[in-house]
Image (cartoon, rainbow, N blue to C red; front, side, top):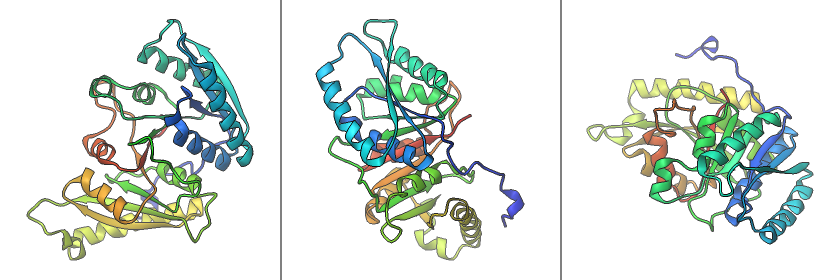
Length: 299
């Protein structure tokens, strides 16, 4: 059984250092804007917006975007700055834009980068999106906001958030993000569900979780870890053991069943020879019909 001394000490909050928000001033980035502002409100941080200039920029679209952003930031009482970085190339490529974002985040002393990671063509996703390269290269915390469809938006007060836990390792990062997103919601309406995902082969019935001693022991240990999150963050997290056959489909089916507004995943940054996301996390993102936040903790 897990004991208190088995759990290492963690930082249970973000600092008040700036949060970087890279923007192309596109309509599909609004979920990312809202999430970055929620995090800034929670941690008392300033948001440093960064746009990497190119010669095809549309200034009219940019001005309209910034006007709307100003109104949202004023409502939340968030300080922000708008910064521009000029790329070396007239039409910079994916790697150059990613390198610029990472270097600027270091110069500005940002604690985290929050950016959109929208669905792209197979070719682009295979070779890596800008967001993927930023997550891989940055030593800061990186939060990618995956929006499966442009019409899907995150509510101002999310009523339910699902945190699937796929492995036995423990990291407070998704719990901190969930606490931030629910900080403006009323306690009665906001439910944070933490589901320990357990793969069961076809030969074992799904209801075996109720009778298996090893699974009951896993549930006890998992509940203890979730209790630590409740104690340190002052938010109620509901633990759940979720047996699955197909991780991607079954996790998303459960999110649909409980009507979760968002899913939060945590993944440590891979080496340069590995894919950004393991297969299970990639399947969850690929099958999602709601916003998925992927947190890459700082190194």
